[in-house]
Image (tube, rainbow, N blue to C red; front, side, top):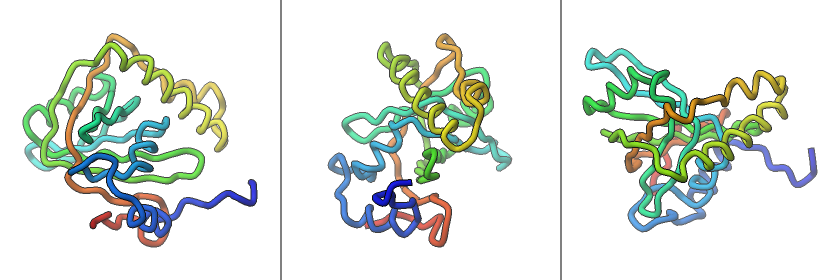
Length: 182
């Protein structure tokens, strides 16, 4: 570990949030959170059934549009229940967690829409998955396990689009779960 390494902590997240302006006017995400979301991180999505039972899914990448809208890319078949809940208007939460430092944040919104992948999504998914696999190897996963974790079928991709309404630090440590507010 180099002497310039600064460990990820919730307090560092809060300080970085306070020091930056959002990347887009009217958006909540700062440039460092936009960069983290698109950097090749683990993407976990959550919603619930109409009875309130939790539904969790895994994404394979994220793209942030110029207006601050998130496009979370995920496997359609493996996340069918989650996609159905979102189609029914259920709320969404998405957590982005980096490897190897475990820096993480979560965004929430009341609703999201399901969209088809765009022509330039697949190369971006490939890039993000390769970075995540390398990060997993760095923290001790075998290359085979890391590659299995990021495997996806190109013909099975859907996009979930929404504008974050709330943002929370999820980096492990004292202060985890704090809402990032102005």
